[in-house]
Length: 147
Image 1 (cartoon, one colour):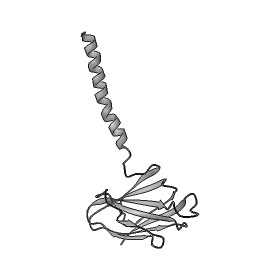
Image 2 (image 1 turned 120 degrees about the horizontal axis):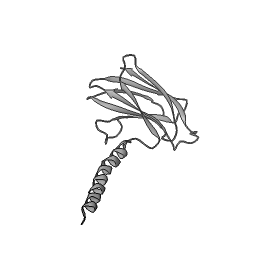
Image 3 (image 1 turned 90 degrees about the horizontal axis):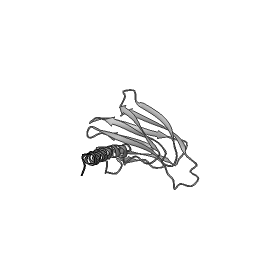
Image 4 (image 1 turned 30 degrees about the horizontal axis):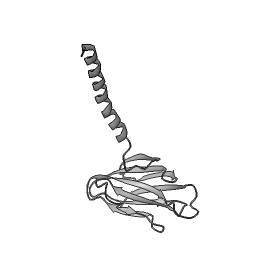
Protein backbone atom coordinates (compact mmCIF):
# COMPACT_ATOMS: atom_id res chain seq x y z
CA UNK A 1 0.00 0.00 0.00
CA UNK A 2 1.46 3.37 -0.98
CA UNK A 3 2.10 6.16 1.49
CA UNK A 4 -0.30 8.42 -0.40
CA UNK A 5 -3.12 5.89 -0.06
CA UNK A 6 -2.39 5.45 3.66
CA UNK A 7 -2.53 9.22 4.15
CA UNK A 8 -5.89 9.43 2.37
CA UNK A 9 -7.33 6.58 4.46
CA UNK A 10 -6.04 8.24 7.63
CA UNK A 11 -7.61 11.57 6.65
CA UNK A 12 -10.93 9.90 5.83
CA UNK A 13 -10.96 8.13 9.23
CA UNK A 14 -10.05 11.40 10.94
CA UNK A 15 -12.87 13.25 9.20
CA UNK A 16 -15.36 10.49 10.00
CA UNK A 17 -14.39 10.50 13.69
CA UNK A 18 -14.73 14.29 13.86
CA UNK A 19 -18.16 14.28 12.21
CA UNK A 20 -19.75 11.90 14.75
CA UNK A 21 -19.57 14.28 17.75
CA UNK A 22 -20.91 17.15 15.64
CA UNK A 23 -23.98 15.07 14.73
CA UNK A 24 -24.50 14.09 18.38
CA UNK A 25 -24.38 17.73 19.50
CA UNK A 26 -26.87 18.74 16.82
CA UNK A 27 -29.35 16.07 18.01
CA UNK A 28 -29.00 17.22 21.64
CA UNK A 29 -29.92 20.83 20.83
CA UNK A 30 -33.64 20.05 21.21
CA UNK A 31 -34.41 18.32 24.51
CA UNK A 32 -36.58 15.22 24.27
CA UNK A 33 -39.17 16.67 26.68
CA UNK A 34 -39.81 19.65 24.37
CA UNK A 35 -42.60 18.90 21.87
CA UNK A 36 -42.23 19.80 18.19
CA UNK A 37 -43.26 23.43 17.70
CA UNK A 38 -42.65 24.43 21.32
CA UNK A 39 -40.20 27.19 22.19
CA UNK A 40 -38.41 27.22 25.56
CA UNK A 41 -38.44 30.61 27.31
CA UNK A 42 -36.18 31.01 30.33
CA UNK A 43 -37.81 33.06 33.10
CA UNK A 44 -34.67 32.90 35.27
CA UNK A 45 -35.16 32.93 39.01
CA UNK A 46 -38.24 34.12 40.81
CA UNK A 47 -38.37 37.92 40.99
CA UNK A 48 -39.50 39.61 44.25
CA UNK A 49 -42.24 41.54 42.41
CA UNK A 50 -43.45 38.39 40.67
CA UNK A 51 -43.39 37.39 37.03
CA UNK A 52 -45.99 37.97 34.34
CA UNK A 53 -45.87 36.55 30.82
CA UNK A 54 -48.47 36.30 28.11
CA UNK A 55 -48.68 34.24 25.00
CA UNK A 56 -50.62 32.22 22.49
CA UNK A 57 -50.71 28.46 22.19
CA UNK A 58 -52.07 26.29 19.40
CA UNK A 59 -51.98 22.49 19.19
CA UNK A 60 -48.73 22.09 21.10
CA UNK A 61 -47.11 25.05 19.40
CA UNK A 62 -46.30 27.78 21.82
CA UNK A 63 -44.03 28.81 24.61
CA UNK A 64 -42.93 26.59 27.46
CA UNK A 65 -41.42 28.36 30.45
CA UNK A 66 -38.41 27.43 32.57
CA UNK A 67 -38.29 28.77 36.13
CA UNK A 68 -35.31 28.26 38.43
CA UNK A 69 -36.47 27.46 41.96
CA UNK A 70 -34.58 27.25 45.23
CA UNK A 71 -35.36 24.87 48.05
CA UNK A 72 -38.15 26.32 50.18
CA UNK A 73 -39.50 28.70 47.49
CA UNK A 74 -43.29 28.81 47.73
CA UNK A 75 -45.22 30.35 44.89
CA UNK A 76 -48.61 30.71 43.34
CA UNK A 77 -48.92 30.20 39.57
CA UNK A 78 -52.12 31.48 37.96
CA UNK A 79 -53.25 30.98 34.36
CA UNK A 80 -55.97 33.20 32.92
CA UNK A 81 -57.45 32.77 29.47
CA UNK A 82 -60.69 33.44 27.66
CA UNK A 83 -60.63 29.78 26.59
CA UNK A 84 -61.98 27.28 29.07
CA UNK A 85 -60.01 24.57 27.19
CA UNK A 86 -56.59 25.97 28.08
CA UNK A 87 -54.88 24.37 31.07
CA UNK A 88 -51.32 24.18 32.28
CA UNK A 89 -48.93 21.68 33.80
CA UNK A 90 -45.86 22.15 35.99
CA UNK A 91 -43.02 19.63 35.88
CA UNK A 92 -40.10 19.41 38.32
CA UNK A 93 -37.14 18.80 36.03
CA UNK A 94 -35.02 17.42 38.88
CA UNK A 95 -37.08 14.28 38.16
CA UNK A 96 -37.84 14.62 34.41
CA UNK A 97 -39.29 11.10 34.15
CA UNK A 98 -41.95 11.82 36.77
CA UNK A 99 -45.45 13.04 36.04
CA UNK A 100 -46.42 16.68 36.43
CA UNK A 101 -46.34 18.04 39.99
CA UNK A 102 -49.44 20.03 39.04
CA UNK A 103 -52.00 19.82 36.23
CA UNK A 104 -54.87 22.29 36.14
CA UNK A 105 -58.42 21.33 35.25
CA UNK A 106 -61.46 23.17 33.92
CA UNK A 107 -62.30 24.87 37.19
CA UNK A 108 -58.93 25.37 38.91
CA UNK A 109 -56.16 27.19 37.07
CA UNK A 110 -54.13 28.15 40.12
CA UNK A 111 -51.20 26.15 41.49
CA UNK A 112 -49.76 26.71 44.96
CA UNK A 113 -46.43 24.90 45.06
CA UNK A 114 -43.35 24.71 47.25
CA UNK A 115 -39.93 23.57 46.03
CA UNK A 116 -38.43 20.69 48.01
CA UNK A 117 -34.98 21.14 46.49
CA UNK A 118 -33.03 23.41 44.15
CA UNK A 119 -34.27 22.63 40.67
CA UNK A 120 -36.08 24.18 37.77
CA UNK A 121 -39.69 23.84 36.86
CA UNK A 122 -41.13 23.57 33.39
CA UNK A 123 -44.47 25.37 33.01
CA UNK A 124 -46.40 24.25 29.93
CA UNK A 125 -49.70 25.85 28.79
CA UNK A 126 -51.79 23.13 27.13
CA UNK A 127 -54.76 23.51 24.80
CA UNK A 128 -56.99 20.45 25.25
CA UNK A 129 -57.35 19.07 21.73
CA UNK A 130 -60.24 16.71 22.41
CA UNK A 131 -62.51 19.53 23.53
CA UNK A 132 -65.39 20.40 21.18
CA UNK A 133 -65.29 23.85 19.54
CA UNK A 134 -61.83 24.48 20.88
CA UNK A 135 -60.85 26.94 18.13
CA UNK A 136 -57.42 27.26 16.61
CA UNK A 137 -55.65 28.38 19.74
CA UNK A 138 -55.90 30.58 22.79
CA UNK A 139 -54.30 33.64 24.36
CA UNK A 140 -53.23 33.40 27.99
CA UNK A 141 -51.61 35.27 30.86
CA UNK A 142 -49.39 33.48 33.33
CA UNK A 143 -48.59 35.06 36.70
CA UNK A 144 -46.09 33.75 39.21
CA UNK A 145 -46.20 35.31 42.68
CA UNK A 146 -44.49 34.65 46.00
CA UNK A 147 -46.82 32.72 48.30
